Structures are given as structure tokens and as C-alpha cells.
Picture 1 (cartoon, rainbow, N blue to C red):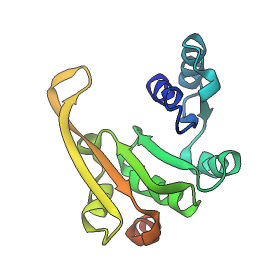
Picture 2 (picture 1 turned 30 degrees about the horizontal axis):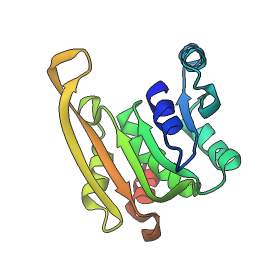
Picture 3 (picture 1 turned 90 degrees about the vertical axis):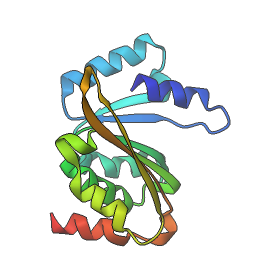
Picture 4 (picture 1 turned 45 degrees about the vertical axis):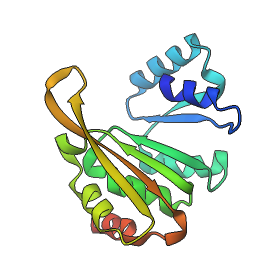
Length: 162
């Protein structure tokens, strides 16, 4: 939360706000405390709950579309359905960037299939790197750029299959 808040705070030409979604209330309180200590609370917030419940709030509070970046670091098996939810709620801006951690382990096979087989509007690459604090364990990060003009494409199809 602090790294994203610092980045948002430094973007004077494109003001925005960093919102982190956290399932664990204790983790959210700690993150909020650190944001306060870093004097970044005015540009960042941490909401408690699941994406399914909180994504509609993004559109309500910031307007739709209003989301330029999503960083997902929770359950890889849900990345594709959370991305579809963001699109269905009309929260993503044209040029929206989507970053996912832990794509190899525990894995995000449906999201990887999606980015390979989506017909248009998606440019993606994966980066191999060592897992945090585990120098001998490889994991992938996926970075993709989306063009909202192509419609929902296969993202919505995959979400319905769940």
C-alpha cells in the first residue's frame, strides 16, 4: 500500500488515489497505520473485504470508469474472475494496467489462458523472478495492458465458467 501511495502521491500531472483491498482486518489496520506514519493517508486507503463486495464501491466512490491500475496478490485461481468483475462494473479506464503476482505458484492457469487466447485489446508479458525471501524459488508476475474498447471478450466467458 505504501509503495503505490508514494507513486500516486508523486504523480502531480495525473492525480489519483491508491486503494488496497484487504480481506484480513488486522492486516488492513496495520497497513492504515503505516500509511498514516508515512503521511500518505490523504492519497491512499485500505478497504476491508473481498473484491466481489468492494469492486462496486470503487465505481461509486471514484466514478466509472476510474481505475487505471490493479495489482493482484491474493489467490491466483481468482485473478481471472476478479478481472472480469472489474470490467463488468465498468471500472477500468482505457489503457488499464493489470499486474498479478504469484502466477506460477500457486498459479493462475485460467488467467494465463485468457491472456494468450484473448483475440484483441490485450498486451501481456510475464516476468520470471525469485519469490520474495526465497532466493531459490521461481515465480512469475504477469503485467498486461488492456484496451477497454474491445469489449469483455473472453474474460467474461471464463468468469461464467466458475
